[in-house]
Length: 395
Ligand SMILES: *Cc1c(COP(=O)(O)O)cnc(C)c1O
Image (cartoon, rainbow, N blue to C red; front, side, top):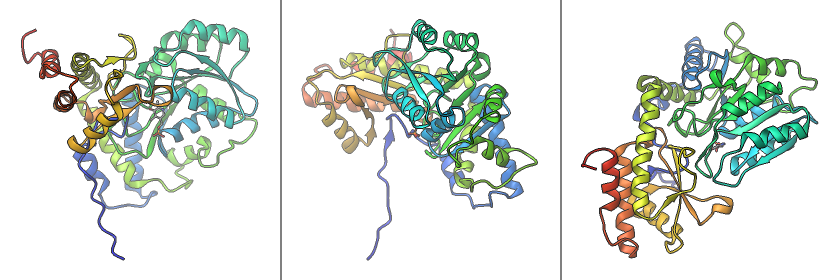
């Protein structure tokens, strides 16, 4: 039986991840392998640790890439700290807050939810009240960028509460890292994880992770061994620590090549320029979408620039339009999850996906589909609105 080559169709990835990958990262993936204990590879691991501290804005010694996708980073962030019976206060306003709560419970912890409607951020006053009611908690866990709703979670006030109550602050920065400031040291985040396939624009497969010395001392003082052998950060640390380098599990060599290159691209661009690019392209996209009758779910000031979640009017068959975007134009965007299924689009402008030409290409395709569907009679309005944001034509 002949099995054909798999030739992936050409796609423009404007969904909730994975994002577009730079050719330099693809080239790094195809480099010859070395052993995961080769001195050359150990040098690469040091590079990755230094480069990861840039987007995390931290000096934390314990800054590594966990083998596995963002969810592995989430599990590691819970299972190393939560021992059976520990309570963790968790913000739930979308899919990923719910997933955090599920992981906490599976680790034998008790998830104390602080909820907000999907599309809103968690109110620090509610966190404060919940802390008063709950008694001591091991950590406050929050999703910085809720990918299911496009909502940004402000962290400063909640970080102050974490310090006042002497509890760890745990933050999911899967979607924000590399596209928005994730100020681990300034804010006082103790445990933070991300994923490679969102704003870092690397294929999925690794979870950047950092923890403060305070968090590390909690790991070291555990009463029971970590229930996961694979994600036990105490054991993984021996491999990442210079001078030790003890075999724990085989590092995903090629993925680490790719991450090093993706992080080098982040460092070359610089964080301020990168954040400004994400903001500008999102502003232009939203200006165009508004002309098509698509309105952002989150309120102004709390919208994510890398994940634009917009409500689709009922007259528009959203799943069909999304399918035609993919098959006719080669453009992937995301649909809604859970209660937002069939109601919203989630348009990712993450990392390499966040460019002016991608925004204009998507708006052009949407205008054509909307004209064909009879939902737009004045073609050019969405592109015009975006172009005004880019200051290509007069306001
Ligand atoms: C994508 C995502 C995850 C899960 O990451 P995977 O790489 O899919 O395992 C977790 N949290 C948030 C906020 C995400 O957007």
